[in-house]
Image (cartoon, rainbow over all chains, first blue to last red; front, side, top):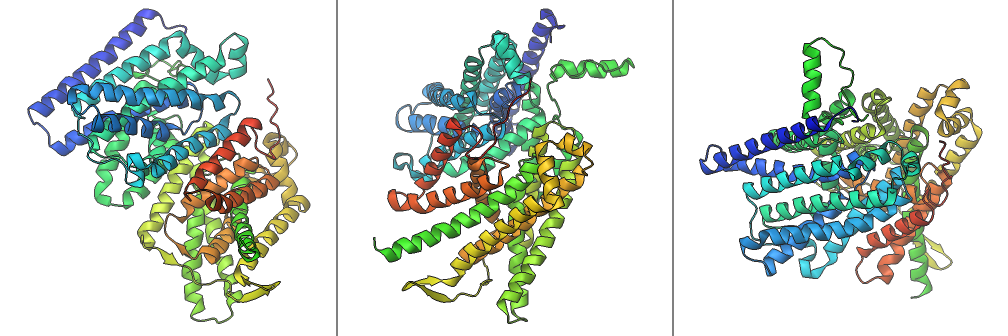
Length: 331
Length: 302
């Protein structure tokens, strides 16, 4: 990390921006010229939305190194707040951004609260507290009449389209990239490596954890808002164990502590789920076994603590028959 | 509320608490020795339910003595689940010995998912009714009718806990398990085959889960392919509440969760608020004592 000078950092960022812009432009072409079927467009939207979710999870689980299961709760808050607003108040598509923001900010505020237990508890205990948070949110929603109790909210205007999804993804990648490279981001990675030591070199552990949880919740809230407006309905049952496991799989498949990894993980997992669709319920058996295989052969995920340029460098070194020494930056 | 209802509720509480306590025990056995949050454990519980179901329906048509059938099917279920647990250990956990801890957790999530949906595909999604494994007689307890099977569930659960305690405290294997749980590397230096002890803990976990499954089937009889999911989350929570890795903590946590599940619906307007109460209790306990009620304080060496 320290050996990297700023120009390569900037280059890398520009590269990623260029790649994403290219992808988005292709998507626009695909949609407007009807080059692909609508079902494929739908899959692309799922990939985009889950990539935002995965980025959000990755901030806490990957960069901060805290095993949290709170994402189902944050996603539910984002989805419900934004869906409620655009159903009853902001019924026009021009106000869609406002309801997305409102959902994301609601999730952010709750995220600050969820950060508090992480000051004292660690590891499996924190995992169970955050799991508890997710399930409490689900249980409250199941009993809240004004949002339809266990039936959930229906007839949400379907504002989400591919431009919104990839616009938000671009925004999420931009924020995450800036944050990870900022002073706070580096403090966050210091906490991951050694909390006590970073505390001793005057990293404000509580502040950093709060910021990380808040940003993570913010991004996850955006993804929740988008999925609610994509499907047109939202119900508490969508934010339970399945959602928690889905999120974890995408983060750890793609690799923790990596932006490219988050996008790759969500794309790969969504494609696998879609490809295995004709296997019906057998797809979860195949998916589960696949997950074991990935973990056995790639325990850090595909892009564990790596970005694209690291991959290019490793490949270049391999071609030049050098020892691929500094392949992994932070591990 | 008259005395009759109170006694019924106390028995319900003891029954549910005993089942949760046993599940939490089976969970904590693996955690304590192998240091692994085994998310596939719920699926092992589910497999056990199905083996018990098919074996007992098969045997009840041929053998009339219910207790004999109960013992036989319990042994079959224990053997099958132990084999699956060992297979999982060697296929999904052992190759990850040197990998980051989280990789093993994700791998166990995958294993759990695969097994659960394998059950769904092989046995169907229809809910099944477990045959009465323990004969249902009504006995009078101080003038109040009490179903015998509920008492037997409690007795069998407590008996299992006592036997487990004797094994852990008294036998060579138990001593080895406690040693590995304290310090795996040091235990290895003392000549303990740590790999075998870890495998033994998986077998213990599977056997206790089978006993718990037989009691759950007796108590609630109706189940479907996702039976393991709910029960195992609650027993995980019970284990954490008591202090994960601690045997007495798991039992205590199991009974606390059982008590909340029985008492909260009586006092609260909506019965599903019991989950919120349980989690609120859990979060408060962990905020006050971050290692659970009976958990040992983990001193961090720098």
